[in-house]
Image (cartoon, rainbow, N blue to C red; front, side, top):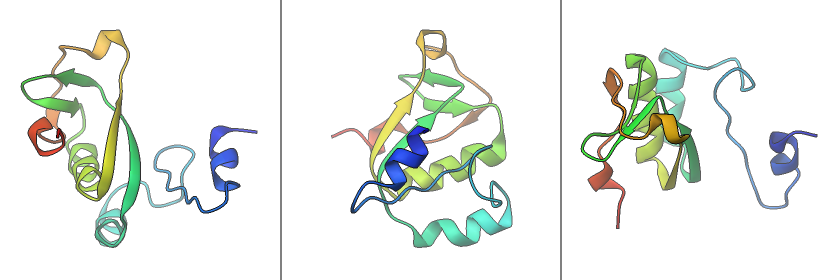
Length: 102
């Protein structure tokens, strides 16, 4: 049983998943129409690069825009990055760290 299955079976929890294992709406207009109506308590965001000056970044402009929307709709953002991503800048900035750090 995968993490998604375990999370979905937890009482009082809901799971929104984007990417290869998520629903049919992965990017594009349908995501932009649906995203503003969702509020997420905790977002786990995998990134291509993470720099303290510019924040998290990715190589895809559309992903950066959608990820930024998801960050704005989240109460807590957890950036997932291994050591090779630290200090690295990718093409598209996802969001400013100052907006999310208390």
